[in-house]
Image 1 (cartoon, protein in one colour):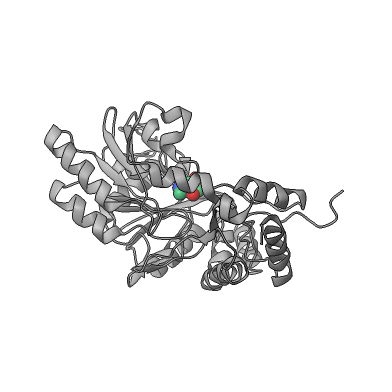
Image 2: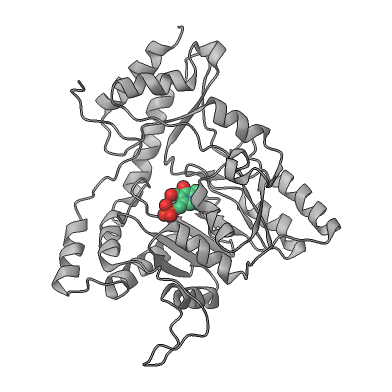
Amino acid sequence: MHHSPRIFLSPPHQSGGEFAFVRETFRTNYLAPGGPMVEAFEAEFTDFTGIAYCLALDSGTAAMHLALRELGVGAGDLILASSLTFIGSISPVTFLGGELCFIDANRSSWTMDPELLAEKLAACAKAGRLPKAVIPTDLYGQSADLDRILEICRPYGVPVIEDTAEAVGARYKDRHAGKGARATVFSFNGNKIITTAGGGMLASDDPELIRHARFLSNQAREPFPHYEHREIGYNYRMSSLAAAVGRGQFQVLEERVQRKRGIFAFYQEQLGGLPGISFMPEASYGCGNRWLTVITVDETAFGATPEQLRLALEQENIEARPIWKPMHMQPIFAACEAVGGGVSEDLFRRGLCLPSGTALTEADLSRICGIVRRQGNS
Ligand SMILES: Cc1ncc(COP(=O)(O)O)c(C=O)c1O
């Protein structure tokens, strides 16, 4: 019945530059993980982010797993993490038998509330059980307040792993988001601002952390011809083909950030005046990549629920999605402690992510806005 092609939430958007790198990979027959294409991608990413050492991997989830291993997280260790995030941010904690405690977001950034973190850390210190790491998520392309979080963690000696999976190209103060954390996780999943058709990066200013993570990512092979093993590792390296796609995507990253921000501005101009519609705020300390444009809907003022909006768009073959369901509300984490929770619960109830693909035209965006407007009272 649908005559127009489906509009996805955030589909891959080719630059046209990918194929030259893919062809180069075939020409050199490097149809394997590692190698010169992967090294070049890592070097470009290092230059761009200003984080000194980068390790390309086959997912952001793998990058988080390795970061946790490098910090020595093991069975029974406590980890404090953002509740408002995607499961891949924190599932690796469970791979290692760690115990999660979820920290709520604040209203001004929708990222981890530093004041709640400060309270929880003080309580942990008093109880004599400090967390092994803190994991703030840079939500929908907006950086958490990293300097404040680092300042809170420093006296306790607790390291920070920043989940910057959604925030490639975002700025925090005068630097790339994620720079300054002990370790930083990026994702190039197909829905992200740039993609490698699935992939991730672990970055750190600590050479030893990345050196050992690289060793673990390659099955922890000791340097012997017969493959000697003294530790258990993983098969997590990025393939050359993925790195080739990533290098082609990387050429247009800055353009993509501008376009994502342009899409947000368009929606805001078209819908911002409607009663009951609000937009995700931008924190004063940074410049996000606006990976997804996210609105909140006040049902009474607007005249429809976010779910009704989502279904109206779906009727027109357009994909929209609720905000991430907070981790402390997930059945699998029912037994975990939550610090606060009201803000992320409220955002989950009222939030909606609008189509934010960088290939969307003004005509597509106008059509989406028209559908949203028709659902309202005014
Ligand atoms: C906040 C966040 N963390 C982690 C991940 C995991 O990344 P990947 O899908 O590359 O494993 C994602 C995205 O998928 C994410 O959005």
